[in-house]
Image (cartoon, rainbow, N blue to C red; front, side, top):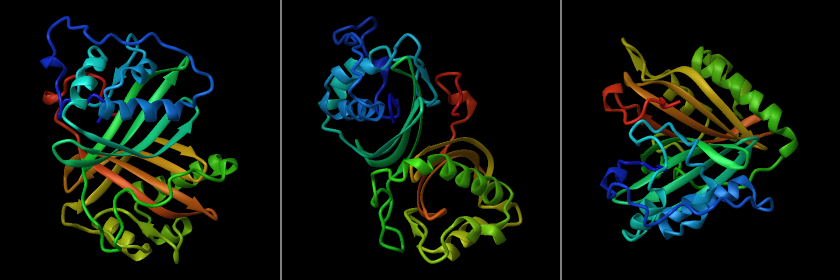
Length: 282
């Protein structure tokens, strides 16, 4: 969503326009990276140019294929967007070293849910990835795509929880060894937020196994990144959904060494001919 030209175009700005200059970067050592990103994303709604100073425009790398490279005009864009009365809700945000990952919902011309990932270097945001889909639901369990716990706990277990999700992704999502599902997922306490699925391991297993003569409907082919903060772990993957090249962002909550809750977004990856930068989705 961040600088997503599916909603607004930087190309629409007058050439050379600098009505809203980037503020000078101020290193605030008291503000966490995740709170800086919360403020940055919220400025889409408010039009406040201050939080945009966290972005290093000279080094910024954009991985949304449908967004032009660079951050030129970002302050002006956010100011103009704010006049359309957008709504931005940062549901949950987490830190993993130099990375911040946030779970968000947007209301522009339609309601969307997404994940935003930023990489920091020397105190500034220098790289960005995202994954957005239309908001749907509630699902058969009555859950929305964003409700549930929002604050990370068990910080001391960050490393082991990251390892658990990576093992789950490799064993279950990539290798399809579904007989081992309960080695990773709580059999009696699993809450699902995917708009098409219900709670419980059986529902998850059926969704992952479902397919036809051409293979599985959801086909994970590569794990790109696993980010963790306490009991929350985000897995960024690539594959195909019903034969369509797609990006999968799966957020898991861990308790007692098992996955107990899951949120996700799936987004079609635009064909290379439609890309507006050459950085790639991942």
